Amino acid sequence: MDLQALSYTKIEGRHGSHEIVVYALSTCGHCRRALTFLDSKGLSYKYLYVDLIPLETKNAIKAELRSLFNENVAFPFAIIDGREHLVGFIEADWILTLGLGEQA
Image (cartoon, rainbow, N blue to C red; front, side, top):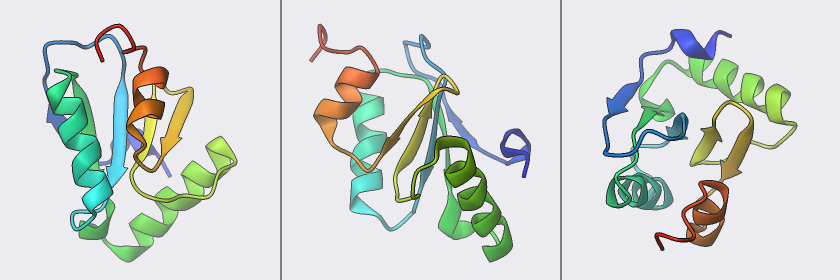
């Protein structure tokens, strides 16, 4: 599965210091809080609601993420700069991983 070929929604923020990709569910409260957090910090990111795409594509995305990061996939699932990842939304973890400690 080529994750780059998927149709993401792009959000342009004031800060683009990280490449942030979020896989989320449209009905998930944790996912909404994660995206609102990114907005509140003025970060640029792109996201994809995996529950709104065909099941076979969703399953392929989950398999690819599991393979790349050796991690069970839960939502939200964020990839930072293609190297680091976050599973679920724990604000302190997102602040630390994104280097936002001085802004928090």
